[in-house]
Image (tube, rainbow, N blue to C red; front, top):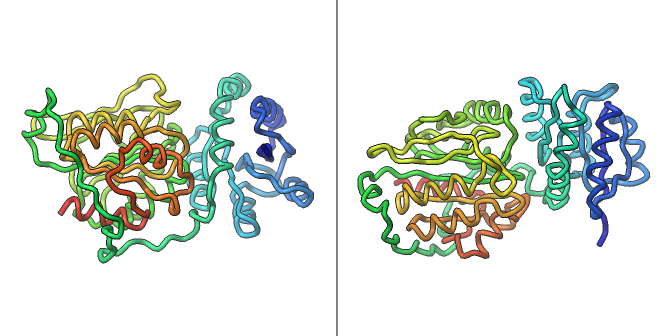
Length: 361
């Protein structure tokens, strides 16, 4: 099997040395070069083009955003941004995601060597995920109109809800909520989905795999683009129509029932499926407390986080949807959900917003 050729572009010699060593621990990854700035990277890329680029943003001679845009214009290539854990770093990294980067890796300003060595699995997973990315799906995507027809894919009615100890609690409310889980490619996909929703929409709870300090900026950016309100979730927030709550990076988010109202609980906890926040944690809580009053959607992403949770939602009577392969950047999470029989329907990215509107009608 052909190894994944990785190019590392970072002005820190320490970062180049450590990251080169840790990603090379995986026999399926080969570091073709590690250079200090984009000018040297472009010279190296004339001889050999990488499969994945790990890219710093603040560098001499040319910044990472400018370099990223040049790559995407010349020859779209999976790029993972290595960003510092700062507010400025978060804002710039979101610009990079909008420009076509497929993922984020974070690095602190202090304790760098120890941090990087402890993050070996995260870096290797990011490279493998990026190598699978279908960058054609990151191009401009027409936003869905109200006339779009989600029924283009046959509807499979959800099963009757099982009798559970929570069934009486579920009967106390008729509020409907939408739970969404996504990872690689999700920042762009969520923008397409959420900007297509009208102000009057069911309440949404969302897990997007993203490091801490980045989700608040991401939510703020979406809030400026969408008719609905979008914000980073806080413990105790109520799930309301016209509001999307995004799980904070580094925290799990669960839905619970308080009287007849759905609330979110934001909490610490161990990694689940190598993630915090985890889609499975969210989906399982929605299955328990919302049951048939929920719609679950699993979108583009690497791995299988959310597949089993969506299965639990499906078995609890929820309507469940998986994004189709053609519109996914990485068809990992939806594929696993479909294999488990967790998805009642399989829809394109453009059909998701009309499906949410129809669900909330």
